[in-house]
Image (cartoon, rainbow, N blue to C red):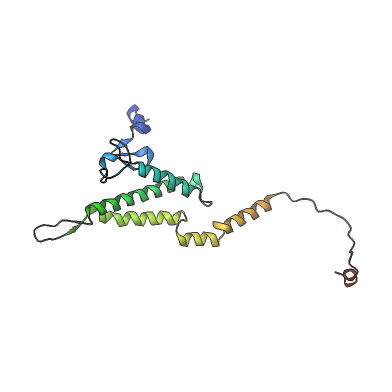
Length: 186
């Protein structure tokens, strides 16, 4: 059984940990942001409004795709958007601080520690894009198999039509009005 303190930590208002609010995703806390002095949206003690807007809009755009199931794919979409936010943060940091640390007396330069983790994050993001069918090759494959795009819409319409109850055929006699057709038996 969880303790009262553990349950209290799960409440959205108390989820501020290490500068991010976990309930809203991994939003940067403005006081820890590298570009807070030049950001118009920065507010002391607040969270990044730009990231919040991006996360909300990007998540909604992906979940609106016809081949994305909000219930089944929702967690993967949230992780994807969180990865994109982290990649953007890393790029912003490297742009501000440079890709290399200043060296010692001999002028030796060392890569930023973040640079070692960035490729892993980008690779994970690309795998997640592929798993959700959001890369161009995956979209082409899904379209070709009828799982996305116009082919998927057509396949869905065919499935719906095939599931409808079929009407009883009408039994009637017809007479041909065209004499030539009657003579030829067509």
